[in-house]
Amino acid sequence: MSTTPTYFEDVSLMVTHYNRSQSLERLLSEMKRVNCQFKEIVVSDDGSKQEHLDYIAQLKNNYDFKLVTTPKNKGLGNNLNKGQDAVETPYTLYIQEDFILLNNFASNLANGLALLKEHPDFDMVRFYAYNKYPYLKKCRDGFSEMLFKWWYPGLDKFAYYSDHPHLRRTTFPEKFGRYREGVSGDKTEFAMMMSFLKNKGKAFFYDAHKSALEQVNSAEEPSTMHRNRWRNSDNFFIRNLRTIYRYFNCYSGLFFRKF
Image (cartoon, rainbow, N blue to C red; front, side, top):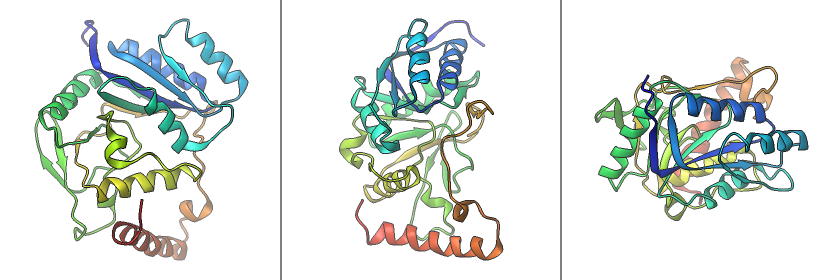
């Protein structure tokens, strides 16, 4: 690993945070370890408990970041919107606080940024996903262009946009709108996914999608995203009903509903 810092003067790191201040510290520490530096770091907090806010105040002694807060929890959409509003550079790297950067991240980010600069018609570069996107066209440096057609088989094609770590133009809201507020995190992400598709967004995908970052949820600070039994059940009938609902939800969203 190079000891020479990689400085991204036209990129801001935006981190969303909620009640996981030690996870935030780990992310910021790992950022230093892999020698990745940004013009600015924006931490957008979603009304965390006072003990976490106090801990974040201590972190500011060791890390230079801008903290954007709210007096009460307003959900993922609001947290993303106010964080993006605070960014002052042309590009935004969005990462949730429960991720860490791996040794090759800085070089991959540099390559992804170069792709966005070379292709002004592209809107974002995705670095992480639970599953590899099913329809890709090889590009370079380990990246592929994501392809979407409504007639492609399966539902995984709809996961074109994701809230997982990605680099995007800071003008993103001007093309795709602001994140939906006052609804669950899943509905916020779904609405942006549909807006991205309807407005013909274009994205690159890092093929080795689990080798640049790692998601870490500790017992002390577990995930704050909770899903109901309907989404998690392995019951045969519920699984099939869920699949039917997803087909209806995705295609009706793409063709008939506004986002």
